[in-house]
Amino acid sequence: MENPILQQEPPLKDFTESVRKNVAITWYRTKLPSEAVKSLHAKSDLKGAIQTLGYLAILAGTCGAAWYSFHHWPWWATASLVFVYGMVSAFLINAVHELGHGTVFRTKWLNTFFCHVFAFFGWINHETFQSSHIRHHRYTLHPPDDLEVVLPVKLVFWHVLKTGIFYPLHIWLWIKPTFRIALGKFEGEWELTLYPESDPESRKVPVRWARCMILGHALILAASIATGQWILPIMLTFGHQCYGGWLFFLCNNTQHVGLKDNVSDFRLCCRTFTLNPVVRFLYWQMNYHIEHHMYAAVPCYNLGKLHKMIRHELPPTPQGLVGVWREINAILKKQEADPTYQHEATLPAPTRLPSVTA
Image 1 (tube, rainbow, N blue to C red):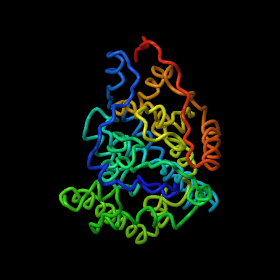
Image 2: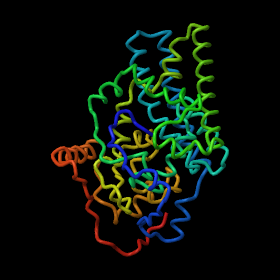
Image 3: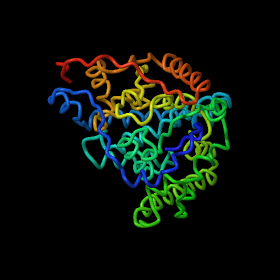
Image 4: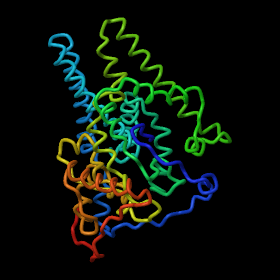
């Protein structure tokens, strides 16, 4: 999904021809014992509920605390709690991402139901996102077959101060595509590739979902105004779009920036780093990004196990947000001096098949 905080170089000129061919990529994957692979791919409704309902409870708890504060506590307490809610709701896209993979719950309809819930409150068109994301996994950083992420990426840090703290204009930048798609208007090379004019049937579902979001949020806004609860739209209708997104930025923009494109090894085009358990939970375990791309069907709550099994073949893992951004900043400085520079992670020598089991 396009991130307004990032600036990407324009795609290659031969976009249409390259996408039409869809050349298959033979990706390198660390070999694992068959019993370990089976165990890692096992989905659990209990573990899925812990992740999904746990995140939902944090969302509801921070929203409820801000609402209570609005009626009983000083303004500065309310503003602080609203900001905390913004920090939590910024990770709604990660919830939609994981549930959209269909790997969180063993029961299929639970994945679909909660994906819709989180997508609604995040103003996320999960239909267009999944169409794009399937290609992103299949052709990771191989433009123009993957235009979800296009290298080189330049991080515009002054945008972090605005969107990460408070930037009202970001509301419109975020939800504008929803109104456009609701009118049946698809534009740009990527959208027109995913939803070509020659296939109007494929456009019906994302258009319908865009209209549902607009109608639903309009009802929330109307009910809030009618009851005098104007604090609710600030969170339920205009949440992570304009405030509190700094933590999400620091987590999510680590995934591919500065790495190599047009390679067939996820260890060279994706980045894994460690996080403390709280932030890792909010981020839906996506700090294990090499692991997620290498074995995309592994549920997020099993990625830590997968990391332990394959870390003997991984590049050095940065420790925490400070460690990973120290690495990224060093790469970006080199790219600023030499725009053609791409960081190539140091890979360990191949080893024997690990005997570790899940």
